[in-house]
Image (cartoon, helix red, strand yellow):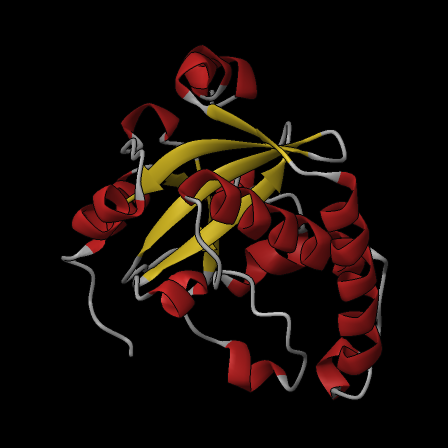
Length: 190
């Protein structure tokens, strides 16, 4: 059985803990609220069960943590617009074909069943801390996934996404150059 105690916690000592400052937290909060206001104009976003705020907040918090860890800017795209414009790898802004999956502590990251790019896996802990766990390459994502980790029955029934649990196989990186080297085999989308 796949649990947090068996598949995440044992590897926590190798994760990098990043603290986000209060002014960035405030900016992320305002940004997440602004995104929701814009998304209400799109038909598939008109029903909001408060999960959208959490999704945008947590995702942007992870992006901020990675910017801080790598000492770069350009990961967070502070612009707001139609969803179609933003369907691209999260790290495109810094020239890397990879995404970011940030999930709340206790949950497993939701990933595409068939992935063409790597994902930096992160865990949000409390309101302003993020653990950078490592990089999941497409082969690792494909090998260590389970539909049983998807909590939402509607998402599970769509059959497109799955839960990732291969934390022991994540690749560590300490710089943007190391991250670029790890992702250079990804299929190009841009």
